[in-house]
Length: 122
Image (cartoon, rainbow, N blue to C red; front, side, top):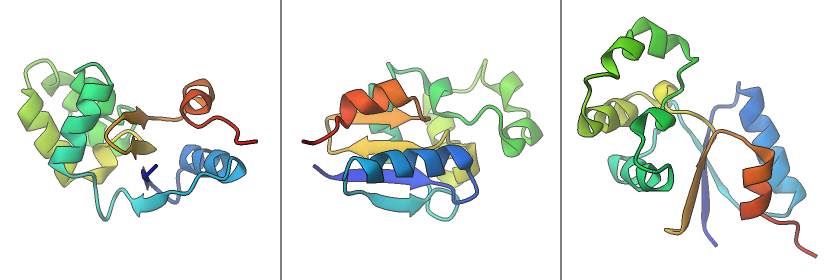
């Protein structure tokens, strides 16, 4: 299983998520979300995992989101425009952002959802 985790080193939620994976012995490729955001293809793939709701991919509590006044723009922005913004600005992406092969994806850290995808190996 190939696991890619886009994370931000200063994010406490990302650190909790990586610790969660480490405790379960899950091998992953950690990538810096600000320096190397998810690609448009990866974002589109994740969009399928979140039921097609592009708003779920955004870090709505982030400073850049507020600076760009995206809460107002989200009413009229197309999914393609949203994905282009996310691919350009890693700080806009909700984190951690995790892709598991082509089968699954998670945004944010919900321990229950993560435990379902990454059960403890015995």
